[in-house]
Amino acid sequence: MKFIRTVIPDVVIIEPAVWGDERGYFVETFRQDKLNDFLGFNINFVQDNESKSGYGVLRGLHYQLAPAAQTKLVRVIKGKVLDVAVDIRTGSPTFGLHVSVELSEQNKRQLLVPRGFAHGFVVLEDETIFAYKVDNYYSPENDRGIAFDDPALGINWLVDKDRLKLSAKDTQQSTLANAEVFTSGQSLYA
Image (cartoon, rainbow, N blue to C red):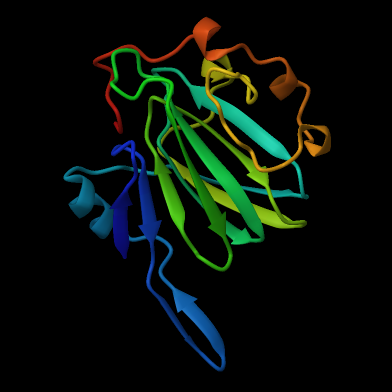
């Protein structure tokens, strides 16, 4: 497994080794020991989630506030997405900046999105299956979001706006300037 820090170093791309032959392929998609060694501390994932979506579906930008904040480890099983993490930690030198990474069944990349980041993705191929681990359970009372099209974020979602498919909730999110966000000093991963 290869761990690659992005332009926001707390957001990490994980490239697993893939072994293939005429029968297909084998890949270790998760190794707790290697992740903990890379980070220097333990993350305890408690829940796995999966979604299936068609082209143009945009889910996000979502996050949970403390005490239910979540670290996410996301990947694509089938298809392709553009995955986005936005730093929403006040006082962070990268506050309001984002990382965009293409995740696909071909590249097998994963993205580690720590607490203090809003997360979302747009589906770039039909019948895309997206999976992720979280280190805290879903908490409706702590669930928050930011508008995917907030001009201050400058995210290029790679899909024309008129072809996007969003939930009612995601069409009504506030801008980052008006969102309830993370304060300095809150724990990043645990």
